[in-house]
Length: 77
Image (tube, rainbow, N blue to C red):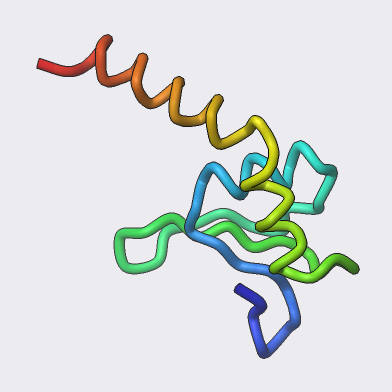
């Protein structure tokens, strides 16, 4: 989501944030807002929609899902 006041990109999705870091996007800050993660990136030339579509089409969501599945098996009941 584009932050209207500064035109930075903000997301609470840790997987999307990791993808953006891998793409070389500059992470300005990390924090928590009302119990949710908040990752703020410097604005970039690609549109939010373009990057999210690239993320969805990549192998990254499958990798992330596999990691979550393995963690559930390790730490689950």
